[in-house]
Image (tube, rainbow, N blue to C red; front, side, top):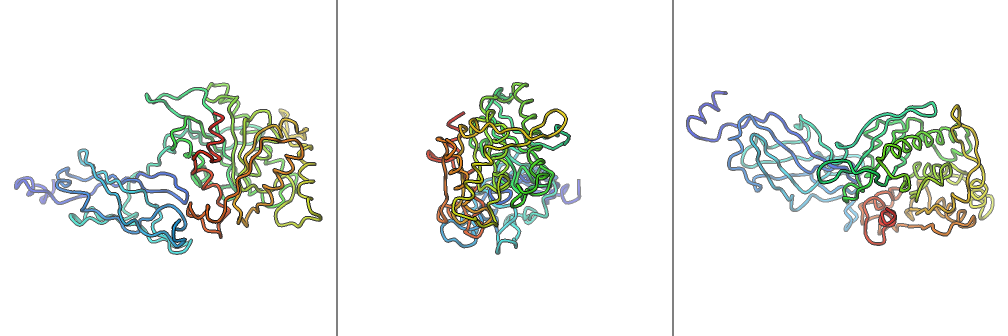
Length: 419
């Protein structure tokens, strides 16, 4: 022991605080990680004596949205931090109302780091740079990470399998496979899995459903990717790999092959469409969100005549996709009848300028013309997007209300109603 601690022991006083380790407990939010709690490990447990929640204050702590849903301005700091504390041995756990790990926003690109202040003992006044221990991530930490090889490529994946109260995996659960957006292409697995709430959405709601995401290492699909056969072949190759992995989960009894669902946003929305074109008889439903155009050119091109996009899609939906034949990817006929029979819920924001609403309108109309009767379309207004902290300038982020909303008439409730 140090001389200060020995002196405190002899006098029965609270020793000088020596912080040894700070762990941070986080969850995946709509705009980065959210801090739920800190655990501070001290050298002597008596350093924790007498501390109360009122001794602590968090500054630069804001909610996870880009803007305040009420004012439309930058999110303000919490008036009430919601702090509670608990002790276990030499560990002090400080829980608070979840706040953005990046701190307070000043514009979209500058953040003021969060700070924890302690009036009773300055040793407990900490900032993000003082977190020298582990970052725990709810749900994600419990996921299975690995790699899978098929069709001549290898991709990393993250898989969430729900457990029962005893901690055992629940067999034969439904599966939701998420197709990542262009911002996550050629990034590491953790970025692909945490760029939005695709891996945690269902688990956070307590819904026993598996969730799967692959890190796709090829470049962004890009606008008008359908003009480049090599890009489309690689998209379909990635999908073939994912389907083969899903087949292995079904064979192992981990997921139910009759309850497979697919969703994705932006480039992932377009990838969802291609996935369903390849394997329409394998999935129960799909949710293409703010979809890109890897089927026919739609974005950043002008229609030669009104209705051209729909006509082009009608032709494409009766055309071919690439499938793995055991040795190579080769063109194969689309089962158009199964494709239009598969229910789809299209999601878009009215003011989306990255992938305009035109694409979802064209997709739904083309499928309707081919006989689809179960499709739905959800268009979020600017006001609805603001309610989730999304301003018009980034209205592309319609996956936020999609994955956050489980109310009675929501898209996610539509999907879970089929479980």
